[in-house]
Length: 128
Image (tube, rainbow, N blue to C red; front, side, top):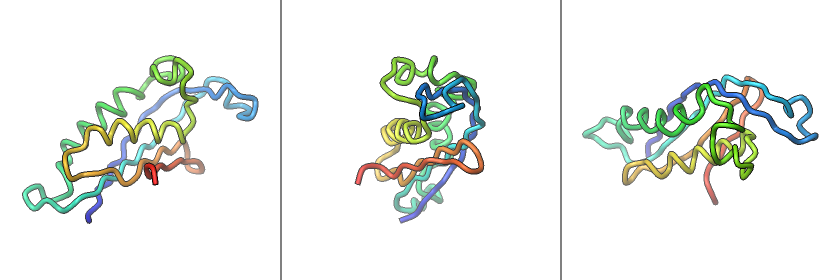
């Protein structure tokens, strides 16, 4: 089993409108680092688990286009309608679901990590 990890960075604004979140209950922005790790058999014809170009295109479509420069609470439908609260944990699961659906046969997700700053990140490894 081989693993391939790609990191993308995006800037987004959000708020966590619960008293438990203190200052984060108001609008604030982060420069998020989103780390996606896929796994699969080494494909000799591609030199890796999957085409890096294909993974980059998937991350562009499912992460960058949805979040970069956006207000998550207002511009990402699943968060705007109140179904999801835009915590790091919820973002990791949301991204997992979208990336997993777009992977080629034989390639699966191993982990999605959403990092808000040097001291706070959330990781999701899928359902057990």
